[in-house]
Image (cartoon, rainbow, N blue to C red):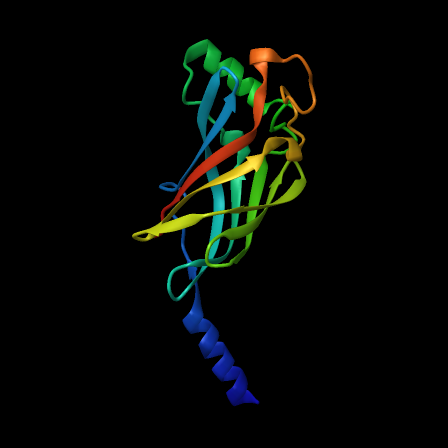
Length: 179
């Protein structure tokens, strides 16, 4: 029995390992679009834990994003401040009540990563492609903001918005830098 457990333990250590993510060098850039344009910004990682296969594919992972760190990069001055305040309000992230968001990777089927995304205490499944570039992992995660109680300006919930309608899909480009 000891030999069997030792063999299983050795096999697992050869097939999966923890990978350290450099939180300062890694980046998450968001893009939200509307009928009349788009807005761009960044969000910082608070923590990240990733398990990879021997071949370097992500098998599991847990990421905590600091939503209070959200920035707006396409606006300057007063307009940037107003828009950032609106993003942090209850219409969107409600940062005061929900300062963190989580992404828990549950599996990699060889083509897609499958995960649970939690924003504003609401969890929904997502899946997305990624690729390994050197020792980094890059990709784009798309999610429907309305599934996380961010319905402001959505044509699904409000009528006659015209060019003020905000699209529901938000993209989050990521570059995970490993140490």
